[in-house]
Length: 372
Image (cartoon, rainbow, N blue to C red; front, side, top):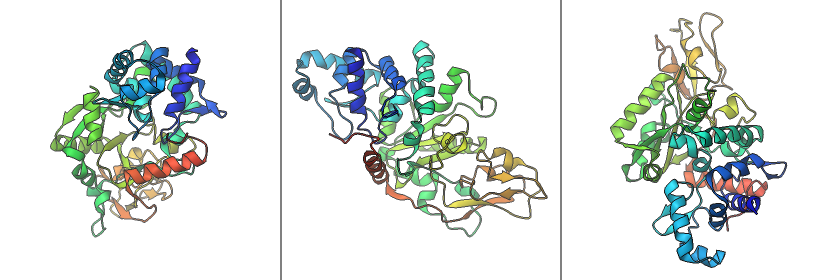
């Protein structure tokens, strides 16, 4: 009966565009155990009558479907929403997207027994069971995220389109809302004592914009910041050597700008450590080296994609490995390395468009259930 409640909940969560972690065609046992950390059996049973966006349900609708009285359901639903394991907006409730669910503990910045267990289970269902492939891209290889180039380091005369600049995404933010939340990837490995970049990068934060910023603040998982504070923060992270990523779309009014390392990030590791070449999309720029290069190796040290080698009198770029992020250019002492345009990958018009495509491709491949 207990196992049945978590399976029913997993079936409902499987309507998300990524589906849920699976192994050999069935739900990952590690993922079902993870749901057991977040939900009691009774809570899982109640939550299994919810749907995912855009299908929100009221307590009355859930009462009709479950056969339980509204007055019995309301405190359970409100308690789950207050904890942040489901989403509650007014009198409507729905299941969270997978990034919010899987990163529940590191976003909360907890360090308790549940956090440790959740981290261990993540290693199983996300990495060993291979869920990262669907978290990062679709079954057909459509990347959900895209590298944002450091626009200040684009070579003179090169055309920079609006969506290729961080400012473009900040300009679009719904309600002008911004919030910083602890990076769940580095926070998770930090709590587990396995963070490889501990002496190189701070844990740092993800920058949420628009409705996502409001939601994370409402959950108590982030701190609201001004536009100026957001810009300053991102500039500091670029200087530190972290890579910026946003949705693989020109328009992102509600979403998150990630600041990624190569050893902890749930997206960049798909390319750097695992077997998903479509983990995220490269920008339409590539690094180029001028004769001003003094072969100091600074750019090579900063490139997490191993796209730069320094064996002769100047650095050399491997275009196939270069993701066009521009991190290599920021601290070049002679400004010898700059970004130049190289059209490599189309970008979708809106976040909704790319998510719809990912959902269709995953559904066709049997990775997710249809939305009810």
